[in-house]
Length: 249
Length: 182
Image (cartoon, rainbow over all chains, first blue to last red; front, top):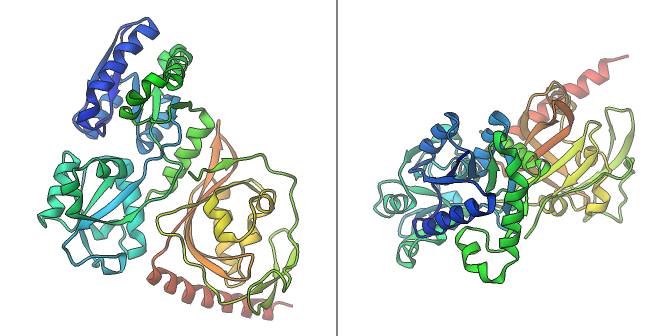
């Protein structure tokens, strides 16, 4: 049976070829055909998951809640010593330089990444901005979010820390990080559909072997796991799920 | 990187009175009585510790409220060592400025399997305090409530000021009620 591998929409375009190469190697390791699909945004990914069209997905923490609790997905691995942090940015030339400067209402641009939005909203709570005080515009990617902030279309932008760091130096220079998360325990997780549970150990074995091979360091970095992978067990994921659940506003 | 370290809790450790040697500054004594009938003397000061921006304070307890896991931010903000915290009742953080009704509401809510959120003034080991916005959710595994997960984040000052006023009123009413009881 062919498995269906959903590549997360928050993978940088530069790294997509590495994910397709990973899928090719997975097919050999698992001894079965598989098809990798890039979803344009999280809405498309969520629809594919809800329709039962995804067997393997590298999910962010917020989606992990849904996939594990509602659809019975199984945790396989998570990146070792890599956490998903988020950052709220403003224009480098704008009037806001610290949280105390944030107005009572705020216009914000973001992608539809649910984990980033949830964390960034929490980051703005000390400025007394609750859910109703944020006017959110959802854009297709982080470059467009940066552009919206720089051109003054919105007052702030929500970024995955990694995505912000991947912007060009020029673009980053026109943005000011206002507040960053330091949660440490939230990360992506490779999840497997319950119908393919027999693939969990072979997947772990393959990714563990990859992690230990010094020749694979650049590949691992491009996959977002520069220190390799570690098995993700139910307890790890349930803890992260509880934590993300507690952060709902 | 700081990580949360789940750990098996040592045996339940009862709370003891705070001593002047442990605190910073001059502490005002208060006698706290807990839901299980035990009590201890705490010493409180007006020294506030700011919440670490961008961080979360995370802990887990068993169903008796005994701490089974805590992250580094919890350790730093509470002033206790991790070894001292694990196995201690979560009430080790209880500040006398918190009304009893707030915790009664918390336990009634999470005891029925629902989440509770609210503003909490916590007591530090050194007699000082810190404010948090806390969310407590039941830790449910295989359909069984094994304990609770608590996540605390930085509150806004306006909300803290409103909570201070509300809790002062609640404490006053609780004190009045206890005075008229035979």
